[in-house]
Every structure is written in structure tokens, then in C-alpha cells.
Length: 328
Ligand SMILES: [Zn+2]
Ligand SMILES: [Zn+2]
Image (cartoon, rainbow, N blue to C red; front, side):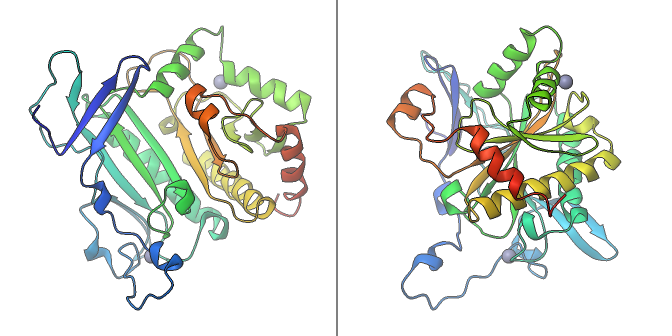
């Protein structure tokens, strides 16, 4: 079988896709030296101010005065790419060209600043960059979904410690998004609006609430300590969110991440933005989910998709609440 450098393969039994990108193993990392016994070579970070020439093509830059705050560049080792590949898959095994976009959002020009250290204004610029890229990529009719996420620390899949998030736009709808849409569609009204209402009235899983944003622990999480940050009022997709409102979301992200960092001693985590796929016209309510990586997924979780949690979300919510008083 002819093999491409990257391709998308479909797994029928699990109704899910796999991206194969043969050169991603060559990605640079600055984490190895942290664990190496001796390291004489100094790592030059391509995301620092002054090293802009070391990154691939720039897709967006957001500046304040003459200093950039956030840059979006193409991923040097993309999982998908928007060049044309001709193979279409044949026979029993369905495969597609790995068409798409893979971009990196460099979240600050400063090497050591993480979300919890950044100004609300800086985080607002990050969200604004996400929004701009979704609007831009949506114009490409071959793209069905854009996934935006952040990996924090090596244990959560991060290869460069300089704060960044990633944008992966695909020509297929990933299985998680397929399930989400199906569940939203099967519900009468907006499921998330109703869930939020119940979380606010039950209180025990509440993290915090600002004028327009709510944060709470997931009732039945996929990872221990998983929490949701969502607009209180119904907004279908992220790109429809007004900039003034994004400032409040930025402030909420800072509060939530700061509390997570202090409660679990700066743990690895993944953060993901959930938005509807582009061709979905049912009800959806965008939200952010943060998945702390304080527990491991073992055989049962991998074989069943079911978490065995050693802690109640209600207990973790209590811990989170005790750390936010000074932040609100
Ligand atoms: Zn850096
Ligand atoms: Zn809603």
C-alpha cells in the first residue's frame, strides 16, 4: 500500500479517526534538558521575542503599540496540512488525505509567563486570536471542524514550555464532537443552559460565577478535577462572542487556572475549547473544559472510556472555592 507522509485513517468499529503524521517525532523539545543529568547545550526558544525568524509562516499577529502580544504561526511539524494530496483510500480501509490546518498560538513573547501569571489583557489577546482564526478557517469549505486546545507541561503532551495553544482544523468531524452534537440534538432546548441552571441551584459543584461566566466541576468527569468554564447566557459558537465579553472570559480563565495551580501544586493539564463543527446547524453552547492530569488513565479507562475516580467532584469543588476568594 502506498504510504503518504501524513494521512487520516478511519476506525470503523470505534467510529473514530486517526491522524498519522510521520515527521512529528522530530519535534524539538526543551523539556529533555530539564531531566538530563548534564546539559551543556542551551536551548534557543523559537517562540521568544527576537526569534521570530525561527518560526514558520506567520498567520496572525496581535500587537499592542509596536510590541506583539500573541502570534499565530504554522506548526513546523503539522498533523495535517493544506497542500493537496491525491490518495483517497481504497478497498476496505478508508483513508483520506490529511487535509487541514495545524497552527500554533504563541501566547506571550516572554518565555516564562504561564496563564496564571499573565494579565487579563494578555489572555484576552489569546482568545481574540482563537476567534480570528476560527472565522478565517471557516471560509474553507473543505474544513468540517476546528479544535483549539492547550497542553500544559510535558506530562500533558507539551513539547515546548513556552506558553502556547494549538489549532487543528480537520476535514472530518472527530468522534467526540459527533457525540456532543448528537447529545445536544437529542435534547429539547439547550442542554448546557439547563445544566448550568441546575449547577447554580445545587451549588455543591460550583467553582465561581461572574456576571456572565460560570465555572463548575463536571458531575461525571472524564479526568479527576475536570471543570467547565461557560457563558451563562446561551451563545452557540465561540466566534459569535463579543470582544467585551471575551475580556470577562479571559478574567475567568485566569481565576480558574490560578486556583487549579494552587490547589494541585501546579499540575499538568489540558484545556480545550468546545465549539460546534462548521456544518452543524443544531443547538450548541460553546464552553471550555479543563482536564487536570492528576490521575492516570489505566486499562479500564482505555478499554471502556469510563473513569474510575478516587475523589468526588463535590470535594474538589470545595478545595477550588477555598482558593478563589482572593482572586475574585
Ligand atoms: Zn520561549
Ligand atoms: Zn445554551
